[in-house]
Length: 193
Image (cartoon, rainbow, N blue to C red):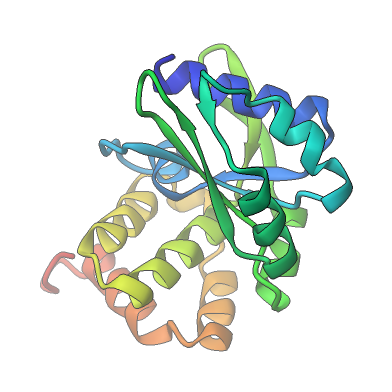
């Protein structure tokens, strides 16, 4: 199962189970920005505990590795878990929404759109993709997240509400980094990220 087939399988399963979800991370950055090789699919999903058994049953061994106890722990703690397709090694990182104001609003801002030629799915709003990348950059320091943000600003500038990102970046403590990325895109004399 290649990455596109896995993406189709996962989003179709989530739609069938009516689990609210949205694509985030590198894949969403690719849709709004510039292509970058990624080895996994990142999703934010609001998985209710009552749906966990049905969800886990949709990813059976030996094709998949998915630990139901890990899923239950992630739902309880609002953390994350992984789905691994064993033959291909393709992986889905499933993240529960953060338990803060931003985390509670993300799913309400998602957009259903064509993400591949023949696949429609929910995608995080570009503002939330940017905020997520600011969060990951602040957590791990990888410059790839800043390059992804710059790519989104160059490619989808008309879709990004910068004032909204600025307001959230201020609340979340990412304003300095956000301003630096904007300058790298807007000011030809500023060093590029």
